[in-house]
Amino acid sequence: MTNTDISWPLRVLTLSRSGWWGALLWLLWMLPANAAEIRVAIRNSVQQVQVGTSTTGVIRDSRGQAVMQLPELQPITVDADRGQLELTDGRDEFGASSTFWLEPSDGGVVWIGDRWYRGKVKLVPSDNGLTAVNYVNVDDYLYSVVGSEMPSSWPQEALRSQAVAARSYALYQQRKASGKPFDLNSNQSSQVYKGLAGEAASTQSAVDATRGKVLTHGGRVIEAVFHSSSGGHTENSEHVWSTAVPYLKGVPDFDQNAPVYSWRAQFSLHEVGDLIGYPGSIEAVEVLSRSPQGRAKRMTIIGDAGTLTMTGNTFRQKLGLRSTKFDLAVSPTSISVAGNGFGHGIGMSQWGARGMAERGKGYGEILTHFYKGTRLGSM
Image (cartoon, rainbow, N blue to C red; front, side, top):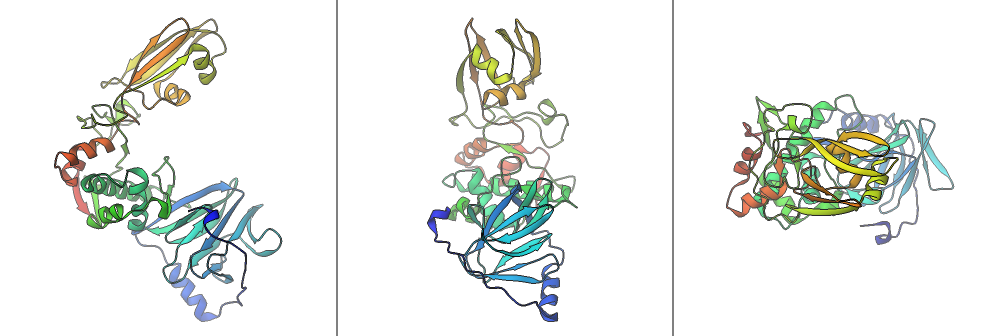
């Protein structure tokens, strides 16, 4: 849903200061959240953001006082101004505070930027403006993450695998984020989270069927990273990243039917030079070292401006390649890339989960295949 889906004429009803009863309710609402609530940065370090609610909402300041009542489907803009936040409709200012909260009534949803989200929103200053943080029940969050990270039409056991992996990953990140303003981002730097736009009946069913289920290793919830497709075999974490993680070990994949199982790309050497920032004419591009499963770890670019060495991942990012699992063929004028898989290749392969589900495997067996030595437990 976008702004064009709803008419947003602005009407703001200012409330009087809350009395002792309102302050008590605010205090109860602000008590530490339980583990079932997650904090997701929807807009991070922006100068302004538009927020609203599907039902009547109340905006409160950092002291818990009601600043205004926001009618349903009526937006308000929050601006950042030298460490303070301001509520405005572009003409008038309706309040300023170091923090604002917006919560809908009667189970409504909140509008943040350009999408609808469950839960409530907290707006806080950041180094470069403000950050809008969605406070949402972890399973409500997963309704969207599962459908944002994996096609909702996929087999239910694959979707359930994604639900447990995403829940485990989110709770692991929550533990690391203690003292920080949010637990996760809403993009691929954490997990993709599109709010209500990512939900479907199948993703809700997958989350409900696995409610409370997490993966543990040594009694702790794991960082259940995942990727699209490994191209036949996943990797040990230490062969791609710097740290060996006992449950992130390479295993055979079941992703042979993935459209990204194999792929090709073609570039002129001039294009490669522009993309990687090489100042001269390129004569050769070579892979210096590979992981056990064939992923490029270090590369060298040779030309009339000298030799440039970089990681395989940097080369991948600059050329926009799907993975670092590739072979190169260099001609006097061009470079051909033949690759396999999509993503870093560590943890669960989403296409592999689908392949195992199509072979009749349940989500527990899928997860313990990709995360070695783990147990499926409950929160």
